[in-house]
Image (cartoon, rainbow over all chains, first blue to last red; front, side, top):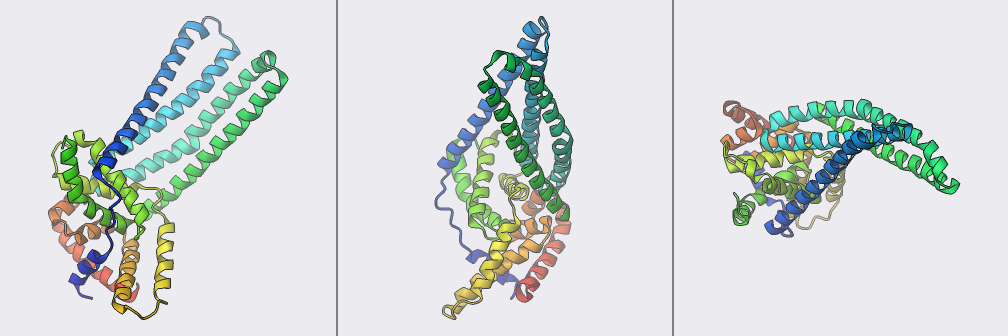
Length: 183
Length: 167
């Protein structure tokens, strides 16, 4: 096969992109952008409410209920903000870097993700659990036994589901890092 | 590129090339290639204001496309396995339309061979096969223009050898 045939062969392959049109892509892009804005607004509002609550209420009548609540919400908020920030940074690099630099950046990015996945996230989960544990006596006192059991079981189950998702994505990212290191 | 009209004309000019580029990255998996094509142009539209014209618009689009394909976690061994399976099936086909079969087989072999290249060489050859000017390729990948020519000829040779011999 001659050199030119390589190009000929390449051109033979199908180019079926008929079911896309630029208008649909713009609509999708706008929808995606709006979704991001909504998530950021919700997150910001949560953080603002948390700060207001801490300063006006929690500090005046400090008890383990407030401490538990603050531990839970702040660990969750911190982890989500970290996720947003790292996704935002990656996107910024994707649109501005040449392939060579982006490849190097991805290696660095996924190495940092290892630290996030194996150190920061477990710490956040531990803090969240401590917070949850501190709230339990209050739930037991104020709610019926059935509702307390429901909170306890659903809290544990949902946490287990979240941990499973985190482990799955951590494994996926680690595999991808290995692949990047080969290339 | 601020209006939808500009975007449409850019899309019509570059989408076929970007799609084939993604096909090469996805080892011929058209569904994945179409997803990457869509993602590329979603980013082009979303970040149109950050395009300052430091590079040409085509370099910018190809950079985004190559980086989207490079950075997808699903860029999987799975799609490669699918193509290997297709390849072995096609060799047992009837002898009708031998040319078409051979071409199809060669394309599949080509995907398989491209997949054996490292990330940078893969990007280089896929852009080259789309007849994109070498200066644009150099800017897209981040290589000095001078080293590109020799590198490309080496990749072409190894690709041809691989398609012929299956190595």
